[in-house]
Image 1 (cartoon, rainbow, N blue to C red):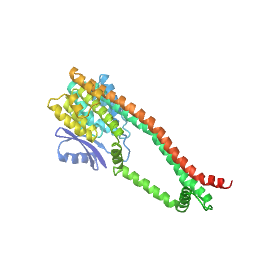
Image 2 (spheres, rainbow, N blue to C red; image 1 turned 45 degrees about the vertical axis):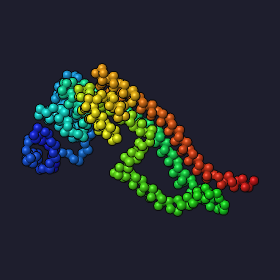
Image 3 (cartoon, rainbow, N blue to C red; image 1 turned 180 degrees about the horizontal axis):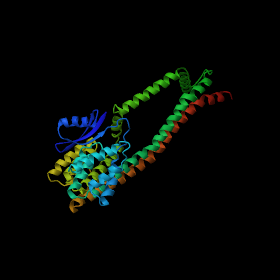
Image 4 (spheres, rainbow, N blue to C red; image 1 turned 90 degrees about the vertical axis):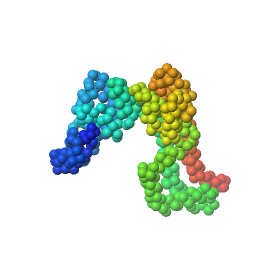
Length: 392
């Protein structure tokens, strides 16, 4: 059977999974590399582990800290309320954090060993709060930061739902016409000698579906499976997205999203007491690759003593409003607040862009779907109309 162990070596905590007949044997195997065992638990691999929610953990920790509990007491309370009947990821993470704190390690160092649950920005926020002693306020700022990013993400996704529904319904109608209606109409046209080219194509397609319908279905299913595999494993979705972002209007939208994230991340770190250059460096990986290079060049110039607002503007990393806000923030010493305000202006521009795109795309999609369906219906009935006209 397998055991999950937490081992302290050289002041750091390491998680190990060991196969052994008993817990004592698992501890002996883990101690072969030095250190000492902090915790040893039986690994339950057959049960699905409940996922760890960083957002929920942050909200509950803020509430407990503001209620007057110490950090260790807060983590213990969160750990104790977690169900022990089914070993969950939440309890494993809280056990790890609590064990590290009891060893005397700072919270930021403990969270660094859990990169899947805590992002580098989260760890940096906690590290900055450890210097000031205001952990609850720092976590509250991070929670607000995540809430704003989630709200923007939901707006983008919700704006794509209606076009996706229209495309799906249009595709369903087209499939119904191509594989059900046209084959039956082709039987009516089979006895007619003179047909227009469009009707001849419909007759050919209907006969093909009647004869090789099974093969067509298998081929379509194979194409769908191949497309799904290419999207999931081959990076096709990333390449399609990269091509889509080359459209000028989408490039402007992507830059707004990136700038909003840059300003909000930088403002969060500056509010926690971090310097401008380290804050910008930590925010750089959150940007698209083209903007990362521009930001690295801007950071190098800021390190030489150049103003932040002018340097970012010189590398096209500001909007006209954001540039003025950052310049005022540098002069007044309120750069964190001005970064947040600049992010809010970018959010408003994003909202306007989404509303405009939605108002344009929705009627265009309806026109395209209507034209396709109407065109097929017209082609189906055109030979009948011509036959009726010739009989008059």
